[in-house]
Image (tube, rainbow, N blue to C red; front, side, top):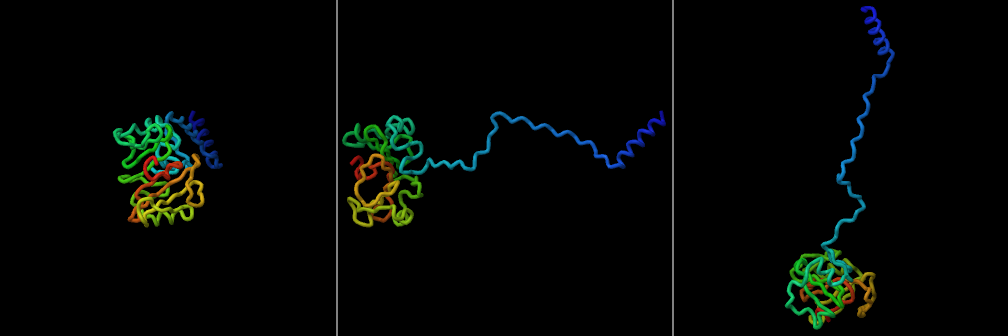
Length: 209
């Protein structure tokens, strides 16, 4: 028995001397994917822009929605006793109950045609301009796409700065119902007093007219 043990030990030493590789431990199996585990978002996913006014909408609202869809998103008229238009069934402008402060919507023939940012609003357009910003900065940002026209009630520097998407030339009244744009209303102090986004109704200067 003792001879046998010595022989086995000698054999083991001989193998080690010959450089035999040590036995490798088996790799641990990969764990199963946990159900419901969060996935890494794609780097190409665009950031949310629900808090800026564009020519086509703001937040959950999109120009062309029905009044019912607007109400479902932001609630009904926060001040139903206010006069929104001579014929509310044809044109009505109001602040929805859950809309951001200083935000108005215009409904024409049951369709959303315009969204306005007025006094009290802290929201911005998709170019980063809102109530209180300088007209010069707005014009510089848009370049030749911005068309200035005289203000109906105040003298210069009060004016309207209009940008259509795609741009149009001149100051002629746009009537194409598919047109989309932004109007920056400039006050007598040379600063933005209101921003309107949507269709041809952004050109109205007195609510629904």
